[in-house]
Image (spheres, rainbow, N blue to C red):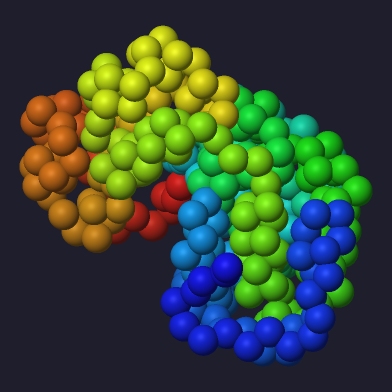
Amino acid sequence: MISGRGPEKLLGLVAAIGGIAMYSVRTMELRGDMHVDGARVWWSDSQVPGVVRAVGVQAQLAGVRRQWKVPGANVKLIISFGDLPRVIGGGPLDWRAGADAPAMIAGPMDSPSLREWSGSQSGVQLQLTPLGAYAMFGVPMAELTNAMTDIRDVMGERGRRLVERIADAPERDRVPMLRFMAEQAVLQGPAVDGWLAESWRRMYTSHGDVRVGPLAEDVGVSRRHLTREFHRLVGLPPKKMGRIMRVGRALGMMSSGASPVETAAICGYYDQSHLESEFRELTGRSPSEVRVRGGRGFSHAA
């Protein structure tokens, strides 16, 4: 059963095509619709484990806009109907998708990158947890880490049909439609062992503030086995993933005005200097840069 945060009206028949539920929809509830820095952004959240939200963006940029993408745990499916961004700096990023790619999958990222946008920016994005992406795409996230991959290279014909279905839908329907299709695919996709699902749940709910040894003991596997399988399916080793998630939480807090001292205490760092060294190592920037800009120009890679 698909659950949501409010009533939804699905009009039309639901038919399973290639393992993905396709449907015709006239009205579905959107969770938000706002303008941010001159761009219109609208989204639809999900309560299905593994599916975070679907987001729509529309903007016409008069000049060039740059954004520093910090490492991120989540995976994105990006369907663009406008100009594609360019990576102009930062850490290594394997851009496997060609200019003719109907959509790209951005895997978990463990290094920052500087990206540049210009012209028409229009499209929809699907945000998934790594295990949600594994269920939807059917491949371990280690194969997609630090890469932008053509959806056809991962999902084949199913991916092409998914993108076509979204492209043919009215603009306002694309976001809730993509979310619904993802929920169906994740619920029908491969499951992971219970101990791994629990390990990810603890990592996610604690914002990465967990120790690998005690976690392995709690879920009943060896530390070596947990590290190997977590890395394979989630895309990064658990210790590295925890560090990235803690820095992501710190970025969010400082972007909202929290001081480094307060942020360090809440996010589980020893002190402010520990926070600053971790932040610099993982994002390539200092906490003071984030606070001065109020978070502008920074975002999670996925």
